[in-house]
Image (cartoon, rainbow, N blue to C red; front, side, top):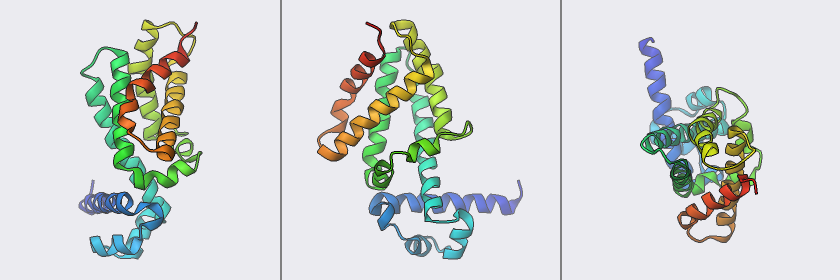
Length: 194
């Protein structure tokens, strides 16, 4: 990689770090590209040339967050052999990420297709995460319970259930972290064959 490309990559990372701070603090609507420009010393034109739009910055922010939490999830579940405990770990990481990024994610939750459009491509980090969870968590889980569900199907069912609980928490409030065990148990009830 050329020196110029390395500099561009570093600039992109630094812009996304600052954008993350602004999205978390101000949300999508409140985040101003002008503030990003002022805080980083990078011109608005250069920011738009790099990301295309404010939505492009936001999508890259989301993808960076997903990659960070995928790495964290892999580290945590690699030390565990019980698939039910792995589900608890994944749920804890997911709920912690949502709490930390709550303000930045508000717009994502109001658009029910937002995460669907991120995860349709096989090379997308979300799809890679889904396949990882299917292989390393759901396949071993299938060996411990009776179900007719396929591992990837189980991932999508888990994702839908856990996001439903998050949406409820966003509306009703309360302590999201206290729902981890119930989330896992409810998911297990859904996938078991009676």
